Image (tube, rainbow, N blue to C red; front, side, top):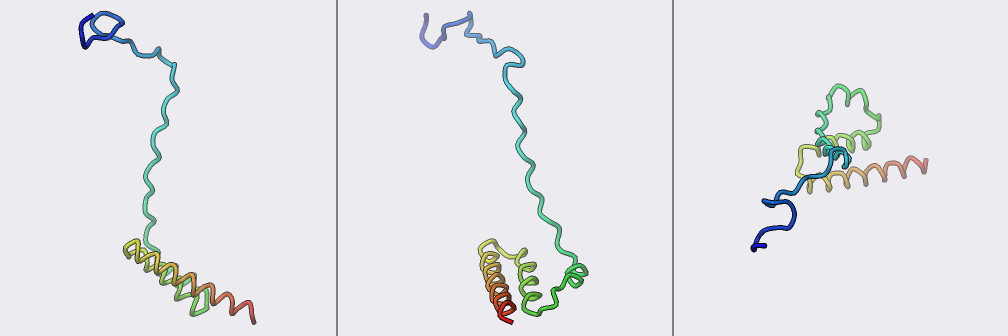
Length: 92
């Protein structure tokens, strides 16, 4: 046998697996599509009626246009506002 050749059929030919011996590989999942921007008319109709809650919701909506690092800070600030607001509501 010469250097660089493989044992098997002449010419280095190696047959593939028989048909149907492997399950079909699933295709990769489709990439997630970004959500459409919120409709301002729907947001106005969906207002909570509490100024702090409405402001926090608007801040989260506006965060979509920010860089990811800035989005995190915006979401944390909105979370803190909502948490404080809910705590005050629970005390009344």
